[in-house]
Image 1: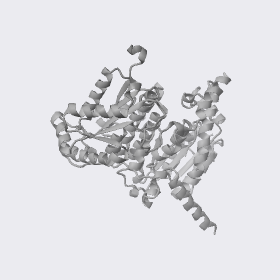
Image 2: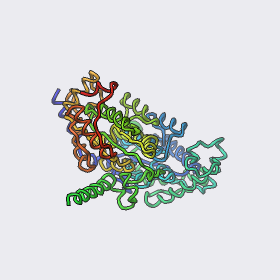
Image 3: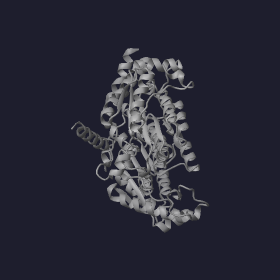
Image 4: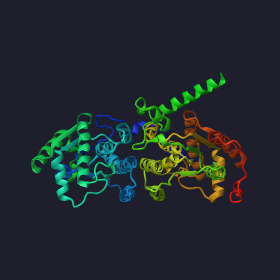
Length: 253
Length: 276
């Protein structure tokens, strides 16, 4: 029994830094063969529709891909739901729970799949936390540190829509805004739609601030869906060597 | 002269302690906040009204923390001080969720570390800070130091964890009940006739033998504590000593902090069984 113990102990002594991406690094890590594409933007900016269409395009082409959504880890979900329902969350715990959720997906899905040479598509990424939690008052440096284990995306699409357009898309389609969604915890206004508008304005400002520092590819969320999708596909095809994610040759022939 | 030197030492310790946990936070932090928090001030909380005292007891499983806290609470209450306790996994927000994650054993190290951080800050915001504002003595059964040590031995970057806890409250007193892992093992085993998966660090694949896994894991944790003990001026107590000896030392230091002169104490009948 002693020998396997010794053998297993060895990898643990590796310096931890080598496995963690360094903070704020603006270029994607080449420590894994896969590629990461993320979409960001305020609610109602059209990002989810566009990522869905991109996913369909790649799926139909038979590419190896995985799709992951913000705030969807089953391990953390019940805690987040309870915290929201009972309004137990403060800016700090709101931020930490979402980081725990992201860490779970990162460690169990995103990183292993990037290592396994997959194309990973993420609907919202760490920039959602940077924009939203900073709007709630969390210190930006603390937030950057919190998420520094996250791999840097190969492409970050930022769907930008004017505040009124985005807010109206959400307000017309949704019967009632949820408490935290509307930013009611910030005490900006007692009126939910008004609070939502003020909160979204702050978030938009935070997103705009990251365009240069985080290499966002800015797309106009107001143009026609199919035209926007054409732009998105062209950019993906030009920036990512899609061939490597194509069906394996023996399968294709 | 000796007094002046002491003060200098204290000031130096205070400065270094402020800088080390959150290297990112140096410079901008206001003096008032630095006194209360390790680095960044906690969002939306004004620490100016703090009149209570935060006393932390750290130490590995089997070091006697919970016994000492029960005795300290009784002694403080008999002296007329209001006491609040806190500990890991006791938050309303995620305490039970962490229990479930641990039971399922499907959780990865970083997720678990962040769930513990959520649990910690929920207690700071909803239990510890309100109590401190009301002038209560808060006895914390473990604090960020255990959480940092557990993360570091699992390969999570030390600076990352220090940054994560930059908004933690700085304790007024931090005691470290230091025991040998072998003693801790004997005490823990006697308590439950078993050693739990996490206590033995089984997730780290250190050994298939439960005893050696426990010893190796707790030795690694202890090494991390030795590093932090200097940086954060822990008051180290010999956890191998008898309950009454350790308790006397605790009462002396806590009494000094709170201005309690007579520190004589004999536990009530309810707690007499702890006194050996």
